[in-house]
Image (cartoon, rainbow, N blue to C red; front, top):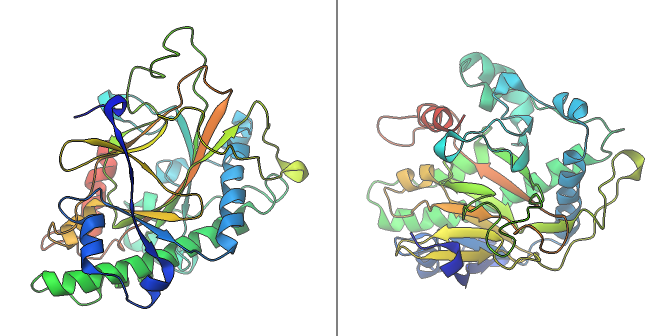
Length: 358
């Protein structure tokens, strides 16, 4: 595959929120975004005004979380969920069996109906604690407003994902024989398995070597090349913060952090391996949301829409201070009992993926 050094910059296909609401999305545009020759990502613009403040605040919390003491972070962990609820760092295995210590994650089962069904689903699926374990939240004293902001932003992302799913359904109904009408919208709207991951990519450690090259010798040093396994993954644009200049605060002193205009390293960011073998750097504008295709969507649409391999490359050490990257991913995925193909429900499918990575 082509390297990030040889990558081209490309804007993702964009659609307005109003066009999604009024079913005014051209099938050709969806094929450009998700079809066989696509990058597997669509950008939604003209979002509600409240989105901008929620994004800035929640991504600032990501740095604040990562600044907590090991003892405080341990109290926010959920070993019972295999560290797929609450704080997680160094628990996920990536390429070559390495443990991922370059980023910290805060996972939340964020579907609005999750708490109402949590106990019954946990009893029905005792071997799936990663999807059924109760959420863990920091106290209001530690991170005031965190839970409220998290819930508001993830609900907004899910609402937009429902509209993207509806557009995909219209395309699939016209192009896939026997496709169940409205299936993807139903999956995204009714799922209690949807999971959010607030990510903090730690500043690259200072090294005396390689400052003019990559931060670790690996192109995908911040997040190894992978496919998402749900239906649609909602993504905010990344927020880059110089934590040396703007130290994250917790408790009553918490305040949204000053965001850098851009990454100090132009090569840092999200990369997609395109169908043609090219490596493409994709930017999501700050006032937009991106939606990527996952493996479950590829299976549901019988390959009409493709999941894409992607990775995140870190800022090189010695460039622009102690820069962290914060972002939010919302994985809309089917309920555990929903069928993704003739032989597998999502529980069976997801188990295969999770066992591979944890």
